[in-house]
Length: 259
Image 1 (tube, rainbow, N blue to C red):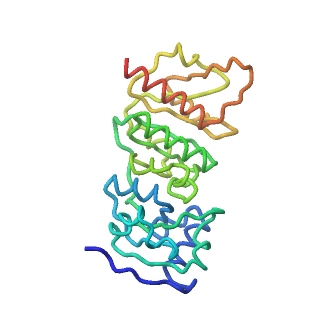
Image 2 (spheres, rainbow, N blue to C red; image 1 turned 180 degrees about the horizontal axis):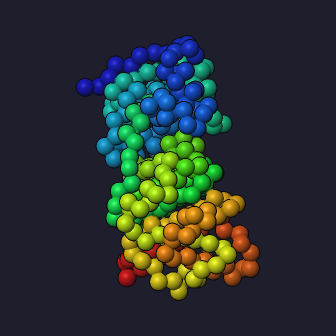
């Protein structure tokens, strides 16, 4: 049954207040227990993975736009927001025409045996989202974010992830001891030592470890890694950022598994 569409004409509406709080603080979703999925791409990706669109908000100017109708019909609740206040629901210069408040998934624990990525204190939301995209595309099943890593479900990481979140088992605020549960070899990337990636004897499956943008993998975690690799950079400059390095490493694992 299609949900009735309720108008919102006040910026003080509780749903709009909730969205603004989620946009203002990257970790606000943890206290609120809900996420703001912004834009039709994220909403379609969530639906394809069996998520429920709880409260969908749409710009009144786009309410009857044909391609958006399946999303509006799929939501449990739909509110049509006056166009004059719609822009306040986004940090983007050109806000998408709709978004939805959805329930935050329950906290999850590390699962054993899944091809994984471990993120060690990565700070940049764009890097984290890009790594999630590469992980989902290249056969990784689980991403474990250690304490100090950018919040995985923040609006910026969600946008950068482009729907990858819904294809992965995600663990936040993990400690080093939690990695023992993986029961997989840890493979670290380092620009200061290790075997060149094309020549490395990569264990498959494994858990790839990617470290802080400036400091790399911390010493305590590096000591737990069974393999360390370097990516050849024949240009002579250490110019790869962590997201690009992750994509290369994950592709190499996927390529070898396909041989």
